[in-house]
Amino acid sequence: MAKNSEMRLSVLLLLLAGWGQTMAATDPKLLLIEQKLKGFSDGDYAPAVERLLAEFELSTGVGLKPGTLRKCGLKISSEAGLGLATPKPLIRALGTGLIKRGFTQDAIILCDVRQQSLQQCGFLPPFSTERQNFEGFPVVAYEPNAPKWAEEKKLWFENQVLPRPGVPTPPWGDARISVLPKTLFDEVDFWINLPVLSDSKSLGVHGAIAAASLGNMANAERFLDNPASATKAAIEVCAIPGLAKKNVLTILSLERYQILGGPGFDANWCLSEKTILASANPVILDFIGLQKINAGRTARAVAIIHPEPPIFSAANAGEIRLGTCRPSEIKLVRLAAE
Image 1 (tube, rainbow, N blue to C red):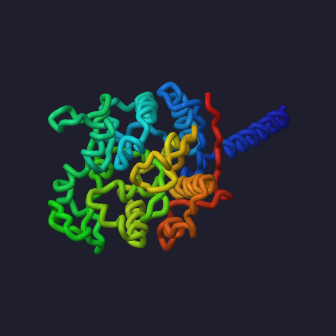
Image 2 (cartoon, rainbow, N blue to C red):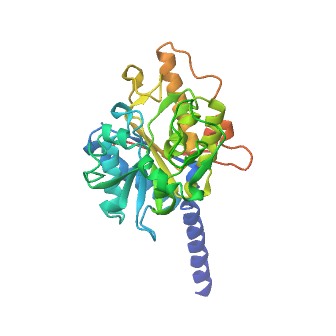
């Protein structure tokens, strides 16, 4: 009898060991989720985003739930205008998913740099005297807050690159200083990056890395005319611990992306795909973005982006490790549209 009990225990332990192996969490930076969409309506995005979030949590063990601050940030992209902004149905679906996970609506903060572009894209009302929210989600524009935030040196990104001649000196008095968002540093438990994809003269690809860096601070325009400085600044900002630690996920919708003339919007060069990509690794998302941009250019007999932009090698140089862009090292999970 004792022998049978020992055998049953051994079998149970083996089963548990095997279960533990299958349930082992994947490093978030090695996971890539491809979620298909049936269309681009609220009804299409809602189940797709919920399935994506659940898969991310299950695979990585990272819970997208309130922490001590009980707030989270959504870094949206509005700088290119209404034609190439973060899709509103994606924001609504993500908000619903986060509320389901314990956040209140007023604790989900939408963020971007310019008040004017947020207004033009419909994320803010036309007048600053009106309540600054989007359908109940609070919205923070960096530029109006930057003079106050600049009083905290930890929010400085200092670089010797100066703006174009004639550009006014910023309110904090030093044109070599860009100001990082206090909202994402100090006021949220985590933040999710919601970029749009386009080409870029300064970085080659304007996507996840660009949105989390140059598109995430006031006084960053000074880098856009200098590709070498833009690459260096983008990678360094993405690696700042206070910002990077809280950036748990990037979600990229391909509802509309641009293959030429970016990051400014040009409808003639936009393509669309019923796909959402998600990862904690911005490098693999931009690498896939580069392939899609080049495929679109080839189809239209336009020169591809070549050689490969230096941002991909810089993302994993020295002590900086933003994430691999080698497909062989990535675990891809494909989710069909429901």
